Length: 157
Image 1 (cartoon, rainbow, N blue to C red):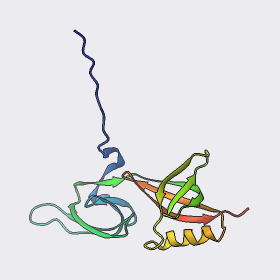
Image 2 (image 1 turned 45 degrees about the vertical axis):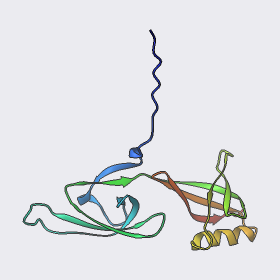
Image 3 (image 1 turned 90 degrees about the vertical axis):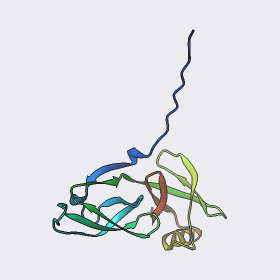
Image 4 (image 1 turned 60 degrees about the vertical axis):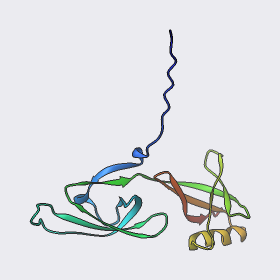
């Protein structure tokens, strides 16, 4: 009797980060704090104490929301460093519901991102520039299965 086994795979998100020693973290680097990808704005280390571990106190700003997070870890332990990618797209259209149509260098179009002109100054500027008939390229930041438009620049011919 023959059985057909079907294995289904799921992504646990582990490939979105790499380990980094807490002692080797530097200001300006990226690290996951309390489950959020953050840019380190402040880091300080304490001396070895009675229980034997020097500690690193790390403060970071969430790269998507701007919220501040803080964590303390022994310098010999590993933290997770998010893998961050940036990609430029040509802005084609902004819909009434603030979803955008973007085209990459290959001509592929995506319409799954939106902007928040009320809550984000950069997004407000993008919308104003677009409706002033400026030709724009936007940069999309991708990290830990989340994406956000983080900047724009005008194309001049």
